[in-house]
Image (tube, rainbow, N blue to C red; front, side, top):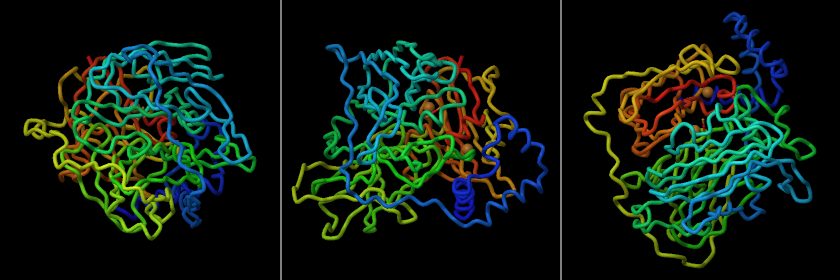
Length: 495
Ligand code: C2O
Ligand code: CU
Ligand code: CU
C-alpha cells in the first residue's frame, strides 16, 4: 500500500516538472481525448511518466524568517458577533524585496483567524473585492446550506452577502476558503484561506497550552511553485492531478522558523495544500501527542512518532520542549526528511500547562456500528478522468438525499486503476462525522474523533457514520483541489 501511494505521488510530481504535455490542452478537449484513449494508450502514457524518476521534494526551510501568526479578526460589536470578511487582491513580499501578486482575506495574502465560541450567534458580511466570482466556504462548520458557501453561492465581483449562523459544535480548528465552480484550486493557490477556532467550556477548562501565537500556534502548510519573477503563476504550475510545489509556505512565511519556550507547545496543523500530503515528525525522533482531529478533541492524547495529513485535514499536536534535548537542532520535518519548520528553543521555561488524560467523550455507539450501509461512494481515476460513482459533478443533479438529524452509514471506496491509483482525501460539507472502520478494521487511535476530511488509499474502504444538523444541499468531494475542479464532487440534499 505504501508503495502504491508513493508511485502515485511520483506521477504527480513528474508531471509538474516535465510540464505534462497534455496539461496545456483545453479542459473539455482533454477530457474527451482521455476518455477516448484505450487502456493500453493510457498505460503507455503513464509509463512515460513513470520512466522519469524525479520527485518534487520540498526545499528545506532555512529558518531565516520568524513564522507569521495570522491576526485575530475582531468582531465589530460589543457582544462579539459581526465580522466582515473581504476577498481581495494584493501584493505580498514573500521574498525579500519582491512583490508577489496574491489573494487574501482582509489583507493581501491568506486570512485572519476567526474565533468563535460554542453558542455564539455569528453574523458575517462577506464581500467579493476580486475581479472574478468567488464564494466563502466554512470548511468543517456545521451550518445550514445557505451559509455554507458552496459553488451555488457565488458572489460576482463587488457583490456581498451576509450570512448568519449559530455555532453548535464543540471546540475545534476549522478553516475557510473559496469554492467557486471550477476555480477553487486557483483561488486557494493564490492565497485565499483562513482559520477558524471554536472554543467551548471544555476547551477552556482543559488547561492545554492556549496562548495564541505563543504556545498555541496555527500552522497552515501550503506548497507552491514560484516562477523566475517570484510570482505564483497558477496556469503554468497547474497539474491536473493536483498542483505540487517545491516551496513550502507556513502561514505564508517562506523559510519559517518558530521560537518557543521550554514548555509544552500546541501546534494546530492544517494541510492547506492543493494536493500534497504531509507526514509530520520531529528530526530528533522524539514523540509528541495528538490531542485533536478535524472537528474536536480526542478522548485521550495519542502518542505518535508521526502524523499524516492529506489536504484539508487538521490535527492538533503538543510537543513538550521542556523534555526534548535542545542542544541539537529541533525541527518539524516531512517524511522524506525535508525540513519544514526549525524550532529555536529559548531558555525561558514558559507556562505550566498540562495534557489532561481525558479530553472528550466522543463515542461510536453500538447502534451506529450496526447500521447498514445506505450510501456508497466510489472514488475513481486520476487527472481529468476523476469521478464519484462513475459521474462527474453536475450542479443540476442531486446525488443523494438524507434526512436531517438521522445518522446514516456511508461506505467510501477508492477503486484502484491499472497504475494502482492514488489516495483521495474525501470531504463532506456541513457535518462532522465518525470513522467506523477502515477495511473493516477499527480506525487508528488518532482518528477516533470528529472528522470532516479523511484519506482514502487505493483499494481502501472506509465506513463512516454521519448526521446532518441542518437542511439544504451540501457538497462532498475529493479535496485534491484540481480533482474537485475536474468534477470529483457530488451533492447531497438534506431534507
Ligand atoms: Cu474545504 Cu468543499 O471544501
Ligand atoms: Cu468544506
Ligand atoms: Cu482525488
